[in-house]
Length: 500
View 1 (tube, rainbow, N blue to C red):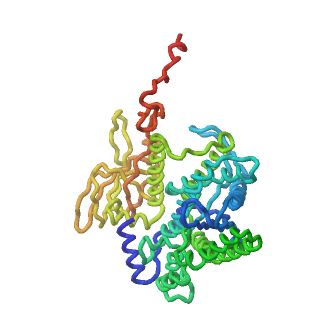
View 2 (view 1 turned 90 degrees about the vertical axis):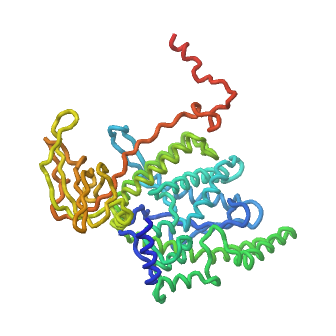
View 3 (view 1 turned 180 degrees about the vertical axis):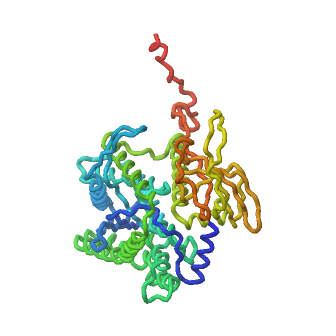
């Protein structure tokens, strides 16, 4: 959204309080999500410093990696916690009957949902998954196989986070920004503390703006991760890291545990405010009414989770570090389809989204003035087809051309074709013909006929989607991941022998 979002952002800046940008919650929220906060050390992107996670707001689990040395024990503990949460989603199954396209099958009744503070944490988990899933398994080392499995699941979850409408791994700032608009810049909205201050300021604050200014006080404000701020590194972390290094050099067995305990207390104090904010945001989002299409998307999420569990059991090989050309094209096509489908469902269900489309000329709203319920035409085969027509008077500009297919939020199964656009006194008259969803001459569906005087909003109908056909890897040139140019093609060997 552009124009309406800009207007709401200016209104929020003027009033000092965030503005609602949606009447519905468009992503599923689990009754027991796994909250996960992560901090990384300065240096290698995937080296973790600490993780706070859990499903109970009052009992978070803190895992801290030592300043130097192996992170194996910390990653093993993280793997145990995440794997236990994922395994809990596999306790119950449901049977799915056969359909025209699919045989009878089963799927899990639940799927994991991990909530993180911001998109930067998603990227950190993606980097961590890229490293861990390729680690060799040492059966003599406890937790080695669990850590590799953790890398597999992190890769799966972060891949799902790239798809619009997915609820497997959600950055909380993006989730909140989908439903509220603050008076600060989009870049500032990536800070959970200030964004939540705009949306849900404490009682003592005069406005969300005042609460945000208080929340970003450099003396008390701490980023939600995964990177820490420089003053915290210099004033707090560096002295403890130096003390730990001196204790290791001098082999002071009592000093090292004491330093690690101080580090645990320091990082717990650092992460606890963000932990509380995450649950505050969760409560706000859970109170929003859920859109109808959310349940269908969560069913799809459970199906994909079931398929991933099956893959991990039967095959289990790690995903490649880089997609080949065909796999990348398939992934891009799925992302584009997910974005279009999610946008269409939000448009059909949320008046805020439709209002934005009306400001950009991709939709118009108006009053039904006349209905010709008996209108018919002769089809290509010569048969008479029922094609009701209606005229809509709208004050909105209608830059669309005749022949454009439209959808209406009130009649989801119907499709409308613009027949004629006629400027009138102050308004525009748009003649529409119902082309889908109205049934046949023998069995007409009169439910798609609106009443005269009804106010309807028409949007551009999404084009029907069909997954493009992509070549196999062996059929792509070597420049795009196929066989080397100097390698002979033996793909057809043996065909003649079989025919004989």
